[in-house]
Image (cartoon, rainbow, N blue to C red; front, side, top):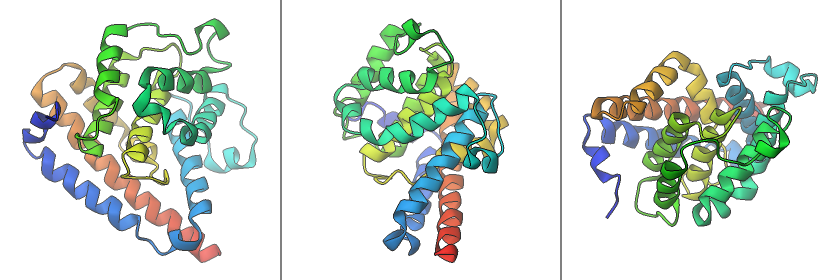
Length: 243
């Protein structure tokens, strides 16, 4: 049985996730992806990294980042994570804790002392429970599982430094590995940043552990996914027009 299935019974959650999935599927059918998937993926990855750093309080102009003039270590960590996610897709469902440690090493280098890289600072028992939920889980719908992974890691902040970057990357790993976004084209971080007050409020509501709090987070997550699907369409249009 899917241990997260009861969450789909919360009011409006299942329809919201279903609608978000439909928008993702539509965005992934864009004709630019047939021949120009590489440039689209590169641009989506860049925007995701910049947005993830901004959600950690380190906002930077996209064009300045593109030009390579920003040396902020938090941003650089987000860029390393965006580049390294693809190499952790196979590891994530087999050894989630190891994958999280590697994500933290990428995200926090130059931000926290080297001995703290990849080491849990708190929440070991709950991280074990999350790892058990992720490992080999082919039952939970991908969007639901990614949302819970993201929220749990935001709540726990189990690593020192930019733990939110790790949380967002783990959610992305889930969507890639479970086949909803196999090429890593969804810049979900952009969706979260576009509704940042809601993102912060909904994650705080989730942390209360109440049904209403969890519902609030899942509704936000569905909305962020829709925004990311729209962003993918924009990127695809831009790449196609410049090809």
